[in-house]
Image (cartoon, rainbow, N blue to C red; front, side, top):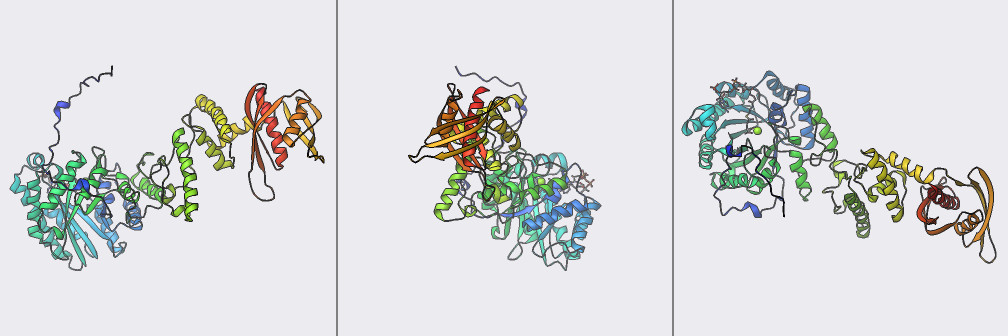
Length: 567
Ligand SMILES: CC(=O)SCCNC(=O)CCNC(=O)[C@H](O)C(C)(C)COP(=O)(O)OP(=O)(O)OC[C@H]1O[C@@H](n2cnc3c(N)ncnc32)[C@H](O)[C@@H]1OP(=O)(O)O
Ligand SMILES: CC(C)C(=O)C(=O)O
Ligand SMILES: [Mg+2]
């Protein structure tokens, strides 16, 4: 019988399900995103307001420069009426001419006259600037926070918009492009007809038109619904707003349910033109939607994100430094572990995938870096975001032969035959089980040399050989047998069989089952690795020899197999 789950005893009755939107002819589910939306980074505002230690001017400046370098063209730089630091930072950007001509900065304000005036004043001298005004419109906020009815709530937005225009006219005559953004905060919980009514009233004041767009930003201030509901809300607004061609419909998802990225993506499918978020998802509580994830999700679908993520570690370094918060090792695209496989079956598939990619690219005559990416378990090529392949395969107790042999090949050019891979991976498994944790390339090499290359009962000191007229191979060799040096000789059809014959003369019985070899390096000091699978005393095991002389390497491999049989 299937085990039965039991009631948790948790007070779930205190919560209500989110009401779906009645939109049976919704179109977004069959849409595909084919181009990047407009992005706005609010790292310096929403991101900053949620930090344990808000950024000082130097840190803000670092983030601003990073965003500009990455290609963000719309950047919310602060809440100037909040603090002197925020105000001064906006002034610094303008007065020190730090804002490129093609970057639109924006600043946020509550709909309160004195705050609006100070906010607009902070922008004096800016070539391009947007004032972003917000007021909460959801029923609970109208009732509890503001104590207003619908009409009064709409009045706050309308009056705030008038004041923005008044102060913009008073202070921003020299601004080449003045933009206006309005957010009905808590849009996600606002009755759709009311959100529409407020937005229309704001537009009636602002009068958007050709070359006078209005940004209507519809935030999931606290993400409370599944992403499909948010998408329905956005499609509904997009269909019902008047003057739609002059409206830039913007979304601002937070991540309370952990579905901020899905919400943003479905919202774009539903008609949103613009997305607000933060690098690595900083922002209030669980954060704003992550701009890195959104951008690289597009990239992974063959769509240009219009943002440069090619040095993801540098982006992460700056963000971690400025926010003083770490990025999770599991964070999509940027975390330390996201291009890493520890587990055996993943490593095996990745290793095969890399080989197939190289072979397919070569067959197509295309450089591998340009060839269509298709490697199991790796949604994008780590190199495309500036990572190397070094950290892709890492070894612990979950790893299999693929991982262990990949590391040996990558770090030491050792290309183990398949059955030796299996044998050695069991050896490594014994250590990982016993010691736990991750095993570095050096540690694996140490185990490899201890297992196959260390001295044992028998060792080869020197050898001489000749081929007779009838093709027979004769060898005489000086071997160390326990503590004695012995000269032994034998014949065969090659060095290995002749050596095996010679060993039989001193009572060491070996039957060679398989043999392979390869060069380890190129040039004058080239060394070779030889691998011998042998039956010794009824046991089948592998031996390895490494030497600059390939014959010596193969004789060492035979000795290695014998020594292993003694252990
Ligand atoms: C969803 C968001 O992220 S919104 C952005 C939130 N960010 C911030 O708040 C950071 C910056 N804010 C601040 O530094 C401060 O709030 C300040 C300086 C702007 C204002 O501070 P204070 O004047 O002390 O007001 P406080 O922050 O307590 O705001 C509450 C008052 O403003 C009103 N209010 C809040 N938001 C708004 C708004 N968007 N429009 C109009 N009034 C508002 C409240 O109803 C309340 O009024 P009351 O005092 O009459 O009850
Ligand atoms: C000010 C608004 C846009 C906001 O940050 C939110 O609603 O989350
Ligand atoms: Mg927000």
